[in-house]
Amino acid sequence: MAPLDRIPTENPPPTSTAWMNPARAFAIIAVVAIHSLGTVVEENFGGMGPDWWLANAIDSACRWSVPVFIMISGALALDPDRGSKPRKFLSKRVWRIGIPLVFWTIVYVLFRRFYLQPDDESWNPGIAILTGSPFVQLYFLYVLAGLTLLTPFFRLLSVHGSRRLQWGTGLIFLGIGMADQWVSMIFDVGEANIATRFLPMAGFYILGWVLRDIVLSVRGALVAWATLAVAIAGTAVWAGLGPGEKPWMFPYEYLAPGVVIASMAAYLLLHFHMREGFGLLHRFYPYSFGVFLLHPLLLYPVRNAMGLPDTVPGVLLHAVIMPIAYAIVCAAITWAAVKIPGVRTVFGEGGPRNPHSRPSTSTPPTEIAPPDPTLSSPIDGDLDAGHTAPGREPTP
Image 1 (spheres, one colour):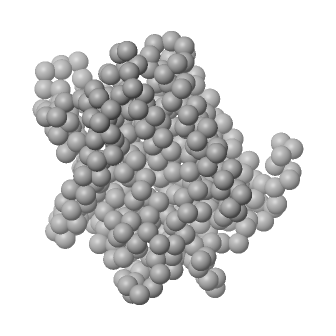
Image 2 (cartoon, one colour):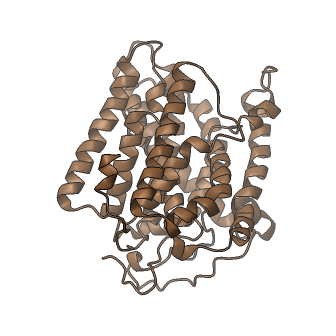
């Protein structure tokens, strides 16, 4: 615990959180790329050709995205200046997470049963739901739901806990999560389920708040970029050349050492680079939750029609062009869907509207909330990003 003794007891001065909006827009593209390449990485291992190594490298380079989403959620939800009474906070999150969780679980259970696996009698929808991961991306909603229930208690750390206590708690939770991942995957002992799936991710949630107001220097950013590159390379090499059955899936897990290191570096780098500008991503951000919810409904039929790529150009198509195309189409569908009163609810917009007014287009993006969140993404914290602490000027 000696390193913790060198940590200051007070938190650093609050900084603008506007960078989180373009960061989430960027991260959702990375999430779609993971899902677009996942089957390629698993099934095209074969002779370890250049197409597989490229898919493996891009997949490894995108793995930071899900932990960063969780870190941003914690950074906002655990902010004591944005807090509210537990009952009010939880009732709001029922609208923003609970209803979408139930609705899209039903949608994807039907999609899997009648489209993807119509003849697979061994698949049990009830058991799939009890695992807390009924479809490829929905586990994230189950993770958020569990973390939401504990948020009023975690928030006591940011309200009453010292900086050292916050760091220590976050690192302990992260260490427990990493140990759980290692034991469950390598030794096949235990398995996450609907009641426990969120617990291994709690460390990311807390550390998102702890790291939120750290702004790297130029030298620090260079070190973070080097760290990110080494972590990504380590994940890719470990997956391809590690012992055992190939590809070795453990290095891709979000609590594997390489991904944890890459996620921390990416979180700090996104803060460093996205403090200003990125207007297009600010405008795309409000529809990122819709992209998250909808993209498999588009991705799987298109990929089934196109077939899995087995060439380098084909991998690049599925890794770069197609994820952007899926995101644009899903964002357009979301834009239209949230204008329909009854449909808004299943996109997390059925509760009280965001009280923040639409910003002026002449105001720099780092000083404002996102442009008219017709959809205020529930993959955040208690409020949308883009606001500064009371009495402070936005970070330039």
